[in-house]
Image 1: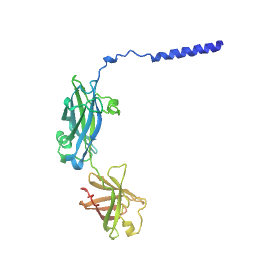
Image 2: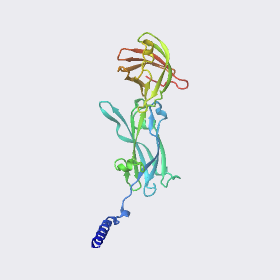
Image 3: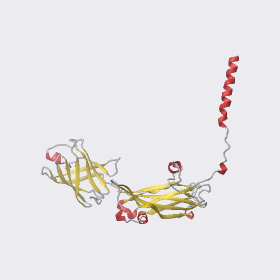
Image 4: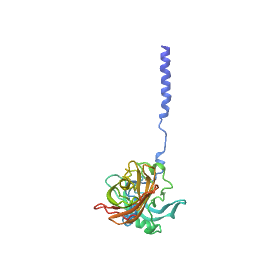
Length: 308
């Protein structure tokens, strides 16, 4: 009995001492300062199409979050600069510091039927962004990036932007307030398909017609595997079959290249000779010395884009 009673007493003491950690601390929540941030509701458009800069835009829907449900916002500056990665040099910024391209006023933030916070939607055309950074459309290249930075000024004189936003507020899905959005200049490519072609020249002197299948590589934008890197030349000249070869045609903003090897390990390259909406003519060659010239015909309703 004594051992049993002592065990109960010891257990009770342990339990009571462990409960001390649950005492509510006396924290002066009412004295804490309150900030503001801009929650990203919708990224309507966050790329510029290199082939259609005139019709491209950067567009967002934002929600102002603060202690007054968005009413403390005075203005939101939208600033921009151009960025380009130069091989062997590094990043080049134009201008060195971002410049103002548009200012949202408090009156631009309106009530909505989905939350209690005020919201706004805006868009900035590619032309506006290009002019703001002091460039022309002719100076823009695929792969360039426009860095848009938001600066929130509230009615208390405070400023919120990338320099004082926390990692959690910037990146967590609930807050989604990075204050900076990178808009890339992309070159959409849609060359996948089955095409008829004419082999105009081969290393063995034979000419013929056939079909070629270009399959988009899911993990690499603008890359397409071809079902036969010789475009039927092996079968016509030896004969031989393509088998397990892995050759790709790559579309980098309209510039075509050929990479990969055949089943014997020889690598491939290409040179575009001419390009019209209806016929793409190029020469292929491999490191074994084989070559050919093919004229690949576009499909109905899908003309070739400007390729080189």
